[in-house]
Length: 456
Image (cartoon, rainbow, N blue to C red):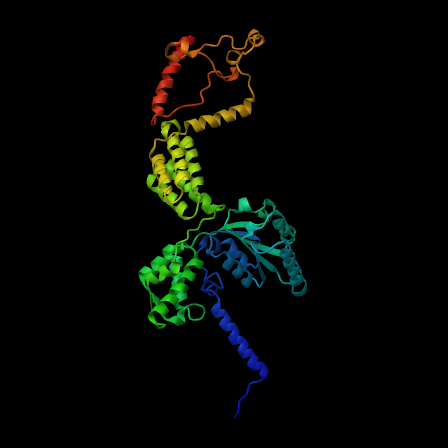
């Protein structure tokens, strides 16, 4: 019996094969996206049993939300799962590439979807923090009336980057970097999956190579999978056959150069400088140097770091080691003179010095107290005896009358009030007993006793 295929059947076969081949050409990270929460790795605090998102999917009542987390933690995947499991139309736009016109087109599509098919639309906005205020405003009415369910993804703190009106209409979920266990499981899953992964290559991965991918990925699933895909190709080409093992060298070549996650305007920037500052304050030179090098390697402006150290020298060391400010200033000027990389060592020297110096925030505390006092009491008049009297008229008005010239008294210490009348006797600066400030404290104690005795 002769068999034959109709022309349409032949076309369908070719189309199917074409789609299959196209799917194979997609990045491994795209192919390995899970289709339901049971396959979703990590983020148990937001997708685990009893969590708001899992409950919302089960009840088919998805609400607008902002997913805040680092790259490769599953924001896009989670949004797609929510759309798929609730039968919603999934539309995705990127704030980097889209404008208000694109938003209007999406809204029209959502209206037609609702009118013609009674189907809900989930709009996923990647990098929503990159939309300006007017662009974010464009969502408000449509989120409010339920035309679209907005799921925004951002690597930046939403409280800084998303307008309050939109933020109040969305629930914020914080997603975390994947743990080492999850990244390791993801790599193994991709290697064994014959339909979407690399299973047909019949490759194994050595324990050290796997650990290297896990370590270098920093909890980023996309980085782990893209590295694995390149390393697998290198291993296959190197051995000239599909069978073999991925080695540490394959992984190192796949990474090529370590690129640390660091957005100068984002959370990584503020978190690193915060860790650096707190390590200096905590008198931990090892940690301070670690965070310094992390920032330099990530491309942070060295002069920004230098300026922060200058500020730190006054805020957290102060007069416990007056030399600290000079050290910080010298390091900044040395870096200006030498540039990078030679000048990097000058910054490291200053960081080690500041971390090892005795600490005092007494000057900083006194400065803040005085600011608060001035806010409360306003511009109090300068006492008459402290006023300048360059003319006879001013002298006749009492300007400068009764002023005691300190150098006319023993040890240049004189019992005389220098604060406004309402603040007489107030003490703002209370030096610690650490470092050079102990010397200052003893000196001030002695002077205050002399002044108190002379007043009596």
